[in-house]
Length: 365
View 1 (cartoon, rainbow, N blue to C red):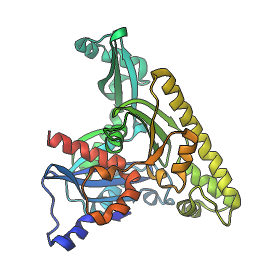
View 2 (cartoon, rainbow, N blue to C red):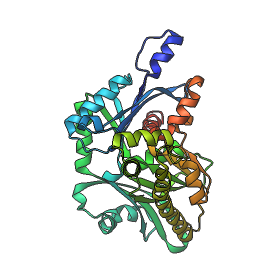
View 3 (tube, helix red, strand yellow):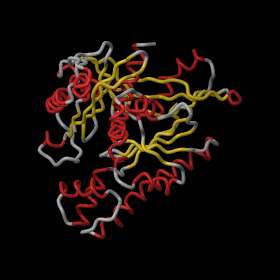
View 4 (cartoon, rainbow, N blue to C red):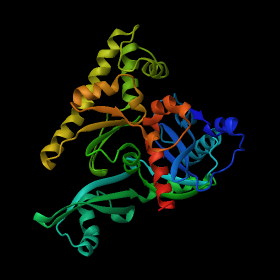
């Protein structure tokens, strides 16, 4: 999918296509697609210029919906294509790094002294990060300080250095400038969680896996990953209906978790697969509540999987918490006639929007 918002706006305004001052491109390179958005500040308000999505499987000669691991040259080709097709004009990139290429965990530090915390990071990191520290780039910040125990909890994040090098090669190869990068979970929380939210579970339903990120007052406090994925659901349909992957993907987009008129056994098998995944997420939420004495009061669904018909109500029934789809475009300005389109597409672009928002915040702070 590629959609050029700037061309539509030009029809009404008569303006020529140009790059708004301070515009930035948010980029989400996933296992099945690349998503981009371009934002700029207009009178202090983040404003949408254009956005687009490019499926990656065709670049490997595979069916749309498949997860792929493309070589750098093919990723550059796909990236250049989506930038051109969506008419992105900014050369500054805010890149979200895949959670699978990173590591983030909450680490207790037995001190509340900021200087002591800094000096202990590398020592504590070795206990939690399963690879040599010279293979990753570290970042951290405090989450909760417990005065009664003289303990500070920090969020420790690490990104594999070779992955960073790979992404930088893609950006350079596309003749663009990498302004910043961050792990996708932070982009997702920024674009999806409201300031009014207390404890929220953001469930990212991806093509290759599902992740749950629990945030307290907008700060990440717990993560968990499981194998349930969009590809698994498509494969389940293919097996139950006796069709190929391409046809199964088409059926999934049309019927979701509903009734498949020509294949009555599909709905039951799909429901069983999704239920197993959400039951695991429910256990994660319950364990979090018991350990932290905080109750998750809302679930936000994101990723392309959130567009599956019926999945929001399914999640709400199993997780026993109100569930809604992410609405990241609500944090930016856009023409009113695009309201329905952007509300529907929102969950798929939450990460890209969040990355772009961070760049705009840094530029205007």
